[in-house]
Image 1: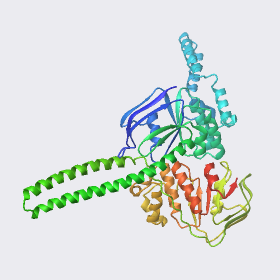
Image 2: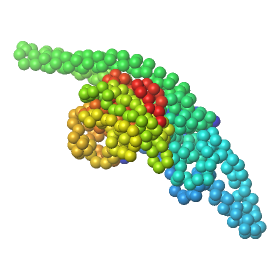
Image 3: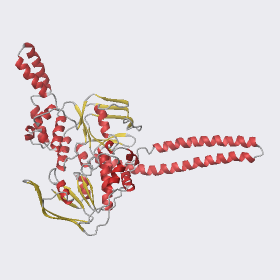
Image 4: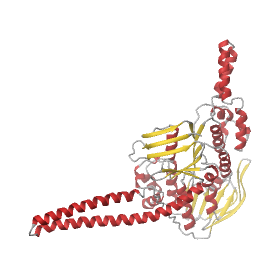
Length: 523
């Protein structure tokens, strides 16, 4: 068992006055399985980079007696097979194997001595067992060992993610920092990765998938508005405590705000009273007496005001961690007909591969349709057919010609430029767009920054706000929860349940899908 200690940590981004972290104290056991949660833009990835030493704190120290490694990571060498990628990202096996081959060819006495040293090092790294260990981990991750002989570049995104995570867990004496490893994994892929991680220990994982966190972690690190806290338990137990605490905080907030108003009113009245007494001097017979009295009153008023200001600041500090999550509003125009989209015997494929086969479904006003399936099963293909971007299918696809469709894409539609120019080009009303962004804790300052400077989570929120700000009778959301924090997920979930807009969505978050779907298209 080892410890990672963070003492008095402070960090600010270059060029930004506001600190991301201030006066942070944490102690983490390297045997724990930690889930890292917090709102988008709170610094989850920054904290991982600080722990890994990729960036240095402005103040304070991070003490660790164990090596760390962050995922995702980049590899720069060219490899001929997946086995080579995995082995070389575990340890210097190929380098040592080449050294042994060279020394055997040399055959000199000095080479023999050096060969013995290299063999000992290779053995310490489990070099003679490493391929069997890799195969065992592939089986645990439900990956075919045949993939080891294939070029790594031919693997799917999910297969690459799993293979690289296996390499990390086979490193000796490492504490792993996993930054959103579930992004773009399908539902089965998430379940497989969760089952794999549940058998491991010694990691921090950033994820916003609630079921995934429940299945993998035994501690939660939460980055709040003003603090970073660690709590033992699953995501659900932490979330239950959070909701109870927020209910208490809401009542406390109401009391504090009432106190603040009363104190500000009292301070104003005190100042006015002193001012009036000072004015009394002008008509007084004994100006010396009245002046002395008004001076005493003024001094007393200033002391009262000073104490009131101190109490006022103390009251305001009590609200530093209060999360004000506004209720998202979703507006949608009424459709002219009940049936909006009809698919009858829809069949489509590429070459010999059939993606959609004899699919029939009717989408009506008020439906919330969940398109689910493994990666490559045709989810995006179906959306493209509905939107009229893809032809060559057989069967009937009937979409009402009047239907206004707003769409949020899997990859954000806007990736560069200034927000004002982008919404002008799209014909979107700034007031509506800015109001929607404010629901997501993104305010007017975002209009002053190039969109290239936004995080992935912020870009995704921009894309969803763009879709929700458009006139529509149907909303299409393609993996809306990628990079999205837990607060956003709950916010969107509650809004859809409340307003019941007509929606088609693709999503791998099972809890989200089950909570919302009135119809399911399983591919």
